[in-house]
Length: 125
Image 1 (cartoon, rainbow, N blue to C red):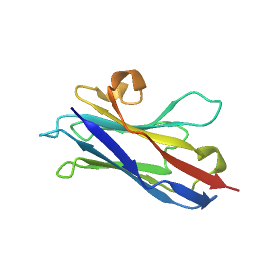
Image 2 (tube, rainbow, N blue to C red):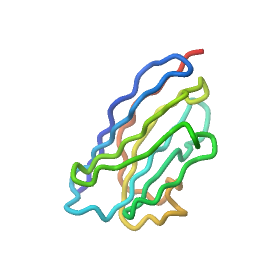
Image 3 (cartoon, rainbow, N blue to C red):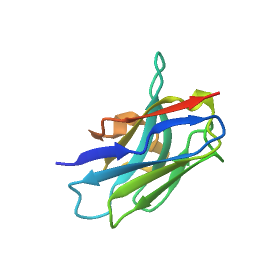
Image 4 (spheres, rainbow, N blue to C red):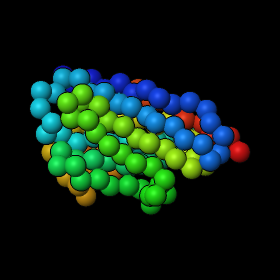
């Protein structure tokens, strides 16, 4: 069974930066995909960034150029660097993982069976 735990959220002012981390325990190899999703109050869940087992990445248009996703396979840990934060980035950020998620499906939440509890990111103006 795969378990997912996120950390690194917090409150920052607009223009600031944060780094989120997500560790997936239960995998014995690196052949899996991981992704970040976010959901703001009253809004639907949105795929933010994902990375597949080959290192291919996908980003939502709203975060391209500001957020960077990376993965440490040895630690089974996913990172999301959030730069130039805006108030509209405020949301609960959740990490998801699963095997066999293809590059073009990385930001589709339906592709993942394993989710973390989430970490809150709040950006003030």
